[in-house]
Image (cartoon, rainbow, N blue to C red):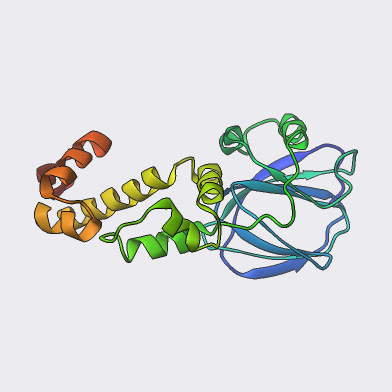
Length: 224
């Protein structure tokens, strides 16, 4: 495909592995999920905290988690697009979509700082799995960080970049979502509180009202 100007598209990935080469540059802006890549023999990953520039002519193999969504900008070669580079995505990048002007989007992305290759990734699917199997246990930031061999400070910063949530807020959201599912299935408020890590039924009821504007009664009501 010969390009004279940038073109953007939103792409969805199914988890299968693929490999190809193209004559134009690709700039990748993940909006959800994570992709592992090998670009001309260099291992890399991209996720909602870091985008990637794949130069024209670079052979790249890739595999993404199912459900991964990436805004891809196909562009002709130009200054700033001649080498493999990962760049830090800001919260504003999460609002980018295929309806925006690709040229302006590209200009914004080229101004973002480079991410060092040694930066360790953070797999949110792995974090979710660990937390949801033990929501009744105490989870502080250090324990979560230990899952990825990161310091508590670095984990906090990486999770905030990826999800927009602090570790405490992230955990609370998972607990309340699971509590809502349990209550919808008819589990008592007391039992749900114990299973998701709240010290009492009243503490869970307060959190549901404050954060989800819901009560055990409304959650049990048939939808429709």
